[in-house]
Image (cartoon, rainbow, N blue to C red; front, side):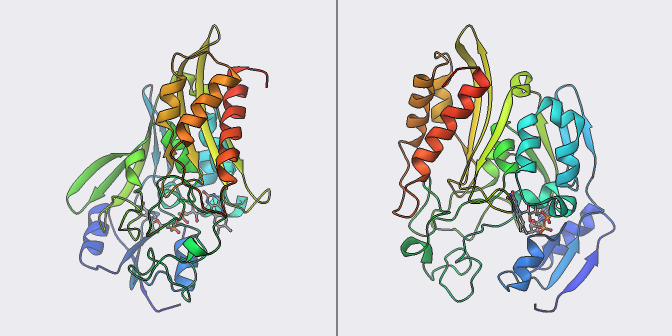
Length: 328
Ligand SMILES: Cc1cc2nc3c(=O)[nH]c(=O)nc-3n(C[C@H](O)[C@H](O)[C@H](O)COP(=O)(O)OP(=O)(O)OC[C@H]3O[C@@H](n4cnc5c(N)ncnc54)[C@H](O)[C@@H]3O)c2cc1C
């Protein structure tokens, strides 16, 4: 690991200023992703500003929304009674990730900003446009099992690894930040980017922009929500495909729905095409298939990840059927 300086900032403004003055500096939260990447020398910050004591570690329940402090650990979030009751999909998504020990350290802000698990990104010996722009994408001709089928570019086919972010995308969460140019409220679906020609940029955040909290707006039918994750082994594995869904049905008709996919793109994938097909349609296996097909019509799989398209389709149909009480 390269040498680096470590610093506590007395308040958020000082932390933001410290990063604004140091282009190679980074925030440190639980360190469960950043420190691993520093050991691999994929990330080489010269200064770490510890933000765990700066942002809130509380979950505040309001009638219209729940505010999750950026320092709330993944364990505390998953176990919180309000989250479990009002947004079961979020609790389930967090519990589907990592391990108990990791979740005890990992924070909400850090989870959203964890970096891709593409093996070529983590291997300094191979070209990777995300790690070193302009060097090429090794995954395009290499191991593609974990890679994107939606929204990828010639430059990058990496996927976003966070489970929590997929549930938050389905729930229309908003990310609150403090940055060099003041505060911002960013819809979670706009936080992460598609790779395009700049795969080195994972998010729309500016250097030094600090996530302070995440707001989840009240959604009454989110009590009827679920997260399902397909992966190569039962724990310590990232999603091949995941589905986060909340459904409101009445008299056999889908009145409203929220649907997002993980493991399929460079960002949590809000399934707006499928949602449009589902709203007002009959709650049936055929209808759910049509919706899944509408979403996946834009999929461009590679030989190594073609399986993700039927897997995603089947998982969407299965989760929507369960939430709607439709026998399969
Ligand atoms: C073996 C293993 C298995 C895992 N499995 C899964 C899994 O299945 N699903 C899953 O979702 N995750 C999984 N994870 C990832 C884990 O969830 C993340 O490492 C963790 O959530 C990151 O949180 P952290 O607080 O440790 O972030 P850190 O490592 O401290 O930081 C991560 C990034 O976020 C930035 N950052 C942190 N806080 C802020 C903030 N408030 N504002 C701005 N920037 C900030 C840091 O600068 C850094 O770039 C796994 C990790 C490991 C090691």
